[in-house]
Amino acid sequence: MTEPETDQPSPRWKRIVFKPSGEALAGPSGTGLDGETLEKTAREIIDLRQGLGVDVCVVVGGGNFWRGRTGSLSGMDPTQSDHIGMLGTVMNALALQDALERCGQDTRVQSAIEMPRIAEPYIRRRAVRHLEKGRVVIFAAGTGNPYFTTDTAAALRAAEIEAEAVVKGTHSGVDGVYSTDPRKDSSAVRYDEIGYLEVMTKNLKVMDATAIAFCRDNDIPIVVFDMSIPGSLRSILLGGRVGTIVHDV
Image (tube, one colour):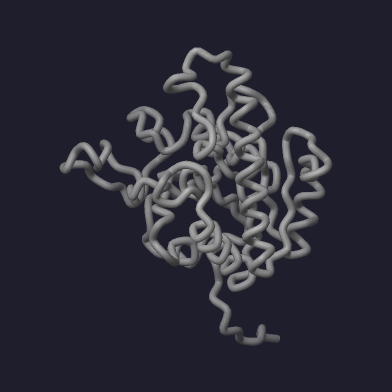
């Protein structure tokens, strides 16, 4: 018996971890939060969840609120600084949750640092159950440990929930992975695809080395793209040549 035809397009991955930087949620200023950017991001996530039937988890950064390892606070105790940064990711998670729910999408925030009055604790099986019920799950507070970036948290959560890809949105107008920084070198070459090992050996700054190695070991592709281009998330899921894919080549 043949399956009935459907008009809904078929995405290349059915479950992803979306990793926007904190600055990407701040709009043009790069600091704090921007309501218009939050709503735009929320609607693109909802398009994946409700329009394409993709399970979406989000791991948010916190750089729009805290960069304590650099600048005037560079002398701060690293563990203390990282804990403050984790709280910045919680603020971003709650703001994105609000934007999603105002647009009609059920959402849960799970925090690696327990704060039961505002977020669920991270429990893998509960997160998977939320996805099965059609909810978006936002993972906050990184891994809950200092010295590990939110990139590493995204790779870790992707493996735990059996996501098929990590999709990393940039905020700087750079639309993928380049041989050098295209903002400083006009001869920089953009890669359509590249291997994990080449990214690490050339130090291409896609994600931190721990996250890249973790994705390689668990065969999780990474897509790096420019979040400012409307419709990019949908295009990536439908197989469009958007950004750069990092995988085994």
